[in-house]
Image (tube, rainbow, N blue to C red; front, side):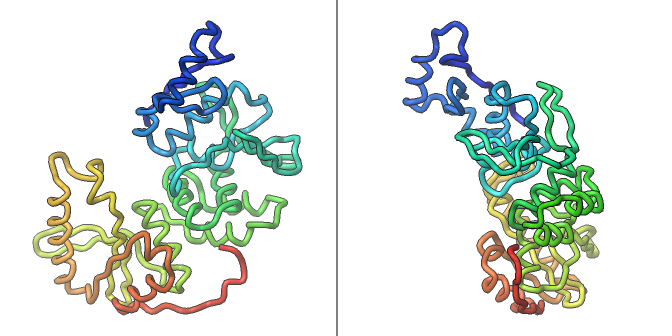
Amino acid sequence: MARLTIIHGGTSDTSGRRGRALRSAADAGAVVRLAPGRFVNAQDWRQATPGERHIARIKALHDRLAPRLVVSHASAAALHGLPWTGEFPDVIEVIDPRRTTTQSLTHVRKRPGVGRVLRTVVMIANGRRITDLVSTAADLAISHELRLSVPALDVALRIGADRDAIRAEVAGRTAVHGRHRASIAIDLLDARSGSPGESVGRVGLDEVGAPRPVLQQEFHDEAGLIGRVDFWFPEQGAVLEFDGRAKYTDAAFRAAGATAADVVVAEKRREDRLRRHRDVRSFGRFGWREANDAEALRAILHGIGVPTTRRPFTSLR
């Protein structure tokens, strides 16, 4: 993970010489202003990941936060390396042990912490407390809709959080709002999920009432390993793949020296081998659009022989 360097200016620049220059640079687009007197290089900012950008916001504001405030929710997720769908919030999220209600400021969102027993770890770099992985997972499950929380919680499970511990943490919270949604998120968790897109896709499959698929099922033929598939429905003999654009367009997802065209050809050959496999009767693909469109996803599933059920949603998911 890259570390964006915070540039201090204005009142935070003890020399008092860079304030005007940095404001001019911000106006020209050469630096990005994160908070009064706190900037980062604009090119580095554009090249950073959403998580790296949010961590820079935390670093920029750390010394302006009262020691009692505990970094939490989305901000703790960034520090734990959990994925986020889209950009992280442009405010730092903290828990204030003295508050009973949420307070939203320009750069900080303070969440209530009165009566809550906080499970925390300490940031080595600056001694700031953050919620531990289990508490962070529970906060996300309670506070956010499934398409955002499930990808993050899948990774939390993969890097060491325990499902029962997350469930117990949610059960111990006094707030009722979000508890049912959190329960659904925890039931859906699977450390085998291969990407945030697959996690979101699994939420979509659950919403349309599809059977629970097997994740990352391996297939072999006489030539050896064909590969692992994203979703396998054994009763229907159906393979379903999540087709995110990144594996075709992002060089980081390709073997060294491989082009996007090479990836397309390899994927086509892999699909042909899967279609010829004796256990595979149908094959389908879906992407972000279908994962967020129940009827479109339902049509794809029916096209490969996977049944769905319609059910009323009586609570926010």
